[in-house]
Image (cartoon, helix red, strand yellow):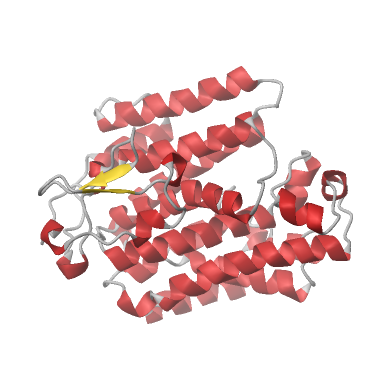
Length: 344
């Protein structure tokens, strides 16, 4: 809760049986993210050891013998617990564990058909969710436990480790999207699995919302990253606007910086709007998993209100995203309102 209070708020609104898997998944996400923040740049080997530990922990959790670590134990319990039955219908998806962790392909068990899905092996950043599986891959009611994809866990760890080993700013908006898809979107897919949802439109919405969430999280952390001499503003946009990395590290707010932040925020807003456009097509229960959209929308609105200055003290104080102070009553009420209405 200390590092992820905004998400704690919406998870607390979920049905009682869904909270443990959602909290476990989000705790895993925080643990892997903290490796980047807690290990100094000169200790690359230490960081690699920690990421490898998490790879081994996930494998052991799937095998039913997790290490004695609270998050690993919680994940193992989730992976081996019965989950909700899933109605897939005409928009059903392939079993998530049919993702080949080496090739990045999703394979339908019925006849071995496959579609390339991973931008890290040559696919488009949006292809994982946009691919349409043939109707003969439908499976009706799925068995439990839910099919948590090993590939999603692997992708999150791999993306965070790559960011740790080469902490350079993304070259362009596409590279920024790739990172968000490899982290936040993968987490969204796992959350859908926790809710027992296997639906093409839900996957599509999760891909867009994940990218919106990932990009917004990086924008939200601009000042904190700058203090550690890290920057996630695209190199090409900064060069075009004559914004140097030192300007970003020193918190120099220029019209050029505002323009760069505006373009990045516009990308996140576009993905958020697309995720919300798909809301009427989602199956029952999917909207709850999409509630992170509330915090994303609020931050982007607040950022616009300060003319796209990510260093604004009021913005950081009210929209910082970590402690309880980052979740005002208005946010909590808005989450509850959307949850009651089945929207996001």
